[in-house]
Image (cartoon, rainbow, N blue to C red; front, top):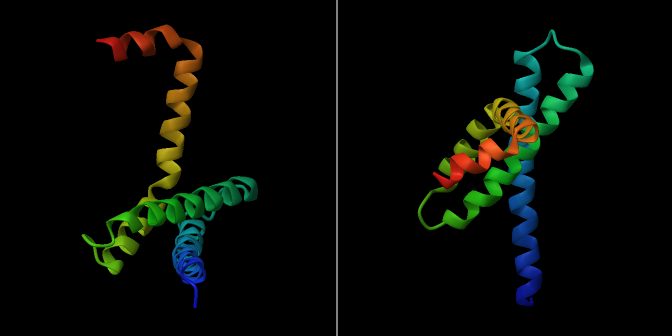
Length: 109
């Protein structure tokens, strides 16, 4: 079998594995926060799923250093904190939108 077909199969398997982890973590997040509106629940689930999959894909570069179970665990933990990380990023961007000069002056120092 040609190498590029093997590589595509490997990428597909990796994405499927981390997608399963992302779905499980998103469902657990929905169970932990049952009394929020449906719109926010769906938004949080999507954020958790995306963060989990992207973290897993980034950790694939450390295949030689970390075992698969460790990479999957780190991906899941990052998914649990994804909504909070998202809120922090949005708050920082809002602050930068209000006063961009202060952000640039802090980076210069």
